[in-house]
Amino acid sequence: MFAMRAVNNEKCSVIARWALAMTLVAAATAHADNGVAQESFIVPPAPNKADPRHVLDVHSGFSTALQNESICPADGGCVFQSGGVLGASLERRWPQGFGLLVGYDLWFLDTDSVYELGVQQALRAGARYTMPTDILFHPVFELSLGGVGYGDTFRIATVGVMAQGFAGGEAELSERFGLLVGFGLRAFTQTEFRTERDRVLRGRNGLFSESLFFQIGLTVM
Image (cartoon, rainbow, N blue to C red):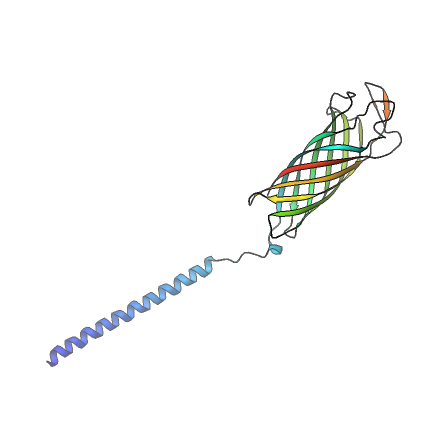
């Protein structure tokens, strides 16, 4: 009987040691798994500490002239009327919503048949503020300055400086794409020039010209 009790006690001791070893292994494994999980989880930075990014904007639209007396004198056809635009801009945008941009626009304008196709080229640089909101729509405000050249087709007959303001909104289509829509005002000067078809001298009085425009474009971030 004493021998049987000794055998049973030995078996219980072996089982107890085996259970203790398994418990220690399980605890060590769980601790290791928690350590790996903690190391793999990285808290993202706050929006105001995130890295800046580049935003490409490709846009189109149309415009109508508000003031064109200098470029369209009474003794000749008007070479600055309504028209459309194709353009693009590249912006460096910071998380707070402020950005710096450079842009290039081609305006194709109605010219009363004085030109085959009136083309105004504009190279500009400026600042844009895209308001960071908690919804998918972000108000946008922009101001840019630059230079313009205008003439028949892609020839340059007159040059000047320009200022452009824009207000609208950017709607998020996805994480990388957005839709930018809004209205703007352009004002520019022009040097004196003579249109060959009607021999009219234009830009003599030094007044600047203005146009109101609507713009819609795709932003790629």
